[in-house]
Amino acid sequence: MSLREPSKEFIETDITIHIFSVSATLVGVCLTVIGLFHISKRISNIQTYGQDFLSVNALLFLMSCIFAYFALIKRKHKRHQLLEKTAERVFFIALSFMVMICGLIVYEFI
Figure 1 (tube, helix red, strand yellow):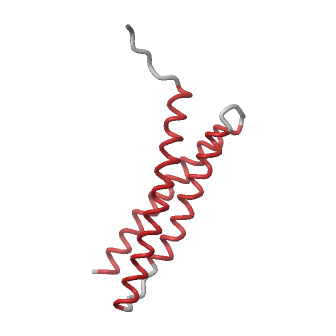
Figure 2 (cartoon, rainbow, N blue to C red):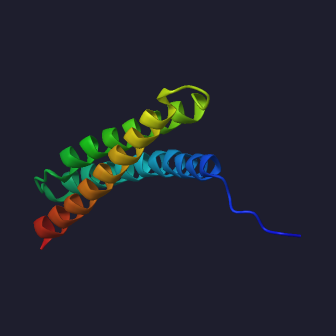
């Protein structure tokens, strides 16, 4: 029995599914941290911009999730690859933005 290498289409589908699921999860993480900011704001009157940046970041992850979803649906159409690449790019922009936000959060609390 020989092991075949996975096809390019299978790998692209696999990546798109991962982007879809991880983006949806990270939207929830952003919303959870925004809720924690609201709780800490009521306790100690700390003014932060982290929650504003996180709401933008949640929207970026949501956009990535939507693009990945449509890329999965439009598997037979020409726009599939464009949607897939757009989902990947928006996802990596959102991840990079999340790292910068984490740096700002740490800087604000120190």
